[in-house]
Structures are given as C-alpha cells and as structure tokens.
Image (tube, rainbow, N blue to C red; front, top):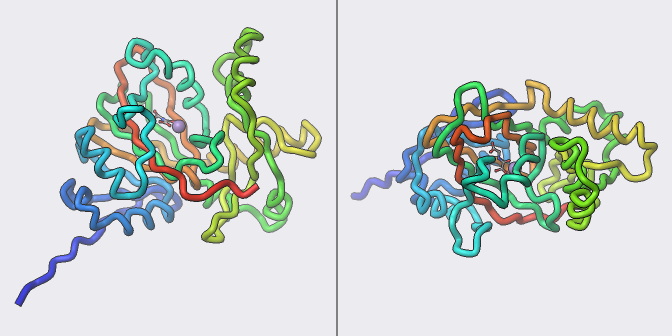
Length: 280
Ligand code: OGA
Ligand code: MN
C-alpha cells in the first residue's frame, strides 16, 4: 500500500484586504506542484510574500517558469537588477525613478505583464526602500454603486512622459520630446477582466481622462489614487535579505518607497508574460 503525500499551500493573510504570506519550503515551491494554488492565491490576494526564501537567480527563474511564461527582460534570459544606483544600472536608473510613485508595470503593452517577482539581495536601511502595494480590485469593489457607474466606461490616456514630472518638475524640452516619442496609450479606467472582476487602472502614467473637463479629469485620477492607496487597501513590505514578493500586476499598483540611491539596495526581478489584453 502506498501513502500519497500531497503538498498543500500553507498561507496566512498579511492584511484583511491585501497580501498573503506563503510558508512552504523552497523545494515544495520549486517542484511546481503548488503552481495552480499559488496562481489562485495571487489573484485573490494581490500580493504574495515568501519570507526569507533565499532563491538563487536560477531558482528564481525556475520558480517563475512554474507559474506561467517567463517574460525575460534581458537577451540572455537573466534576472533584472533593480536599483537606483547608476554604477550598477546606468541605463535603467533614470527610468526607475518613476518607480517611486504608484504605478502598474508595462502600461505601454497591448497585454500587460501578469505578475512581477522581486527578490531582495541587499535591503536599504530600515525605514527606507519598502515596496508599497495597493489592491485595485478591492479599491474598485468598495466604491459606491453611483461611483462605479460614473467610472465604469471612462478611458484614460497613459504615457511615460506624464510620469517624468513626478521626479523632475522642470525637465528640458528635449527630454520631454524624447519621452513623448515613446508614445501614449488609451487604457480603461475600470478594467473588466475575463473572470468578471473589475479593477482600477491608475498610476503616475495616467495623464488625463478622455472627454472630461481637465479639472474633473485631475480630480478623478488623483482622487481615485488617494482612495486606492488608503491603508485598508495597501501593504508596505519591509525587506529582509532573501525575501521574494510577487504581485498581480493586473490587480494592483505598487511603488518603491524612497531610498538613498547610493545605499546599495539591490533587488532582482523576473516577470510573467501577460495573459489578458486591456479591455478598451
Ligand atoms: C519594479 C518596481 C519597486 C521596488 O521592479 O517594477 O517598481 O521597490 N520595483 O524596487
Ligand atoms: Mn514597477
């Protein structure tokens, strides 16, 4: 007689409306046996924390591949270094300044990435460099029926150049033109997913709401950002070396909290290919 031992996902909630900690061992996670349950938990909770899991770079890639299609950001398939330190990451450091403000990754893509996995190699000093997350499913679901009806069909122009002004208030014209050349994209303010659930699409790339007076447009974009980032809907992760966090990029916003670019903070990122286009 054989006794089948089935690995179960072991979780605990971080906050009532966002985040779960996953308590399984590294080997259990790498086996792939828990992948379906992890995907369900990710959609339900927005953010999954794997405290001190200490994946090597290859293990992070292997784990990413158990969950879906690995969307490599580098030609050699390696993980991406996330740091504001220009010595470590000269080309990306400029663009990563936008990551200090609430955003969704890949708003320029037809199919935004499904999820990002970020692991901590070197944390910043305590009190700096947390990563904040906002559950934009929960934020939508708790709007009044009148507000839902008001927002449901609105469209928003998103553009990288809109986020430039967050970290550089008086940029040279050439820089504005350079970022404008990257393009703009119209996205729904409320994304109705295949599942039928709806989430808010916001962030520092949101420039204006189409067909609405400019004052009203700013109130909608910034008022909803304030709503979605209130304590009930958010979680701020304080990093320890070896932690891994996954966020559902289709139902959350995130941001890095301020840290000294020279403090040595070093994070490693992998991404999962998107599976659902924006519904515009
Ligand atoms: C990202 C990001 C936040 C952080 O990797 O997409 O926004 O805390 N990172 O480094
Ligand atoms: Mn990001």
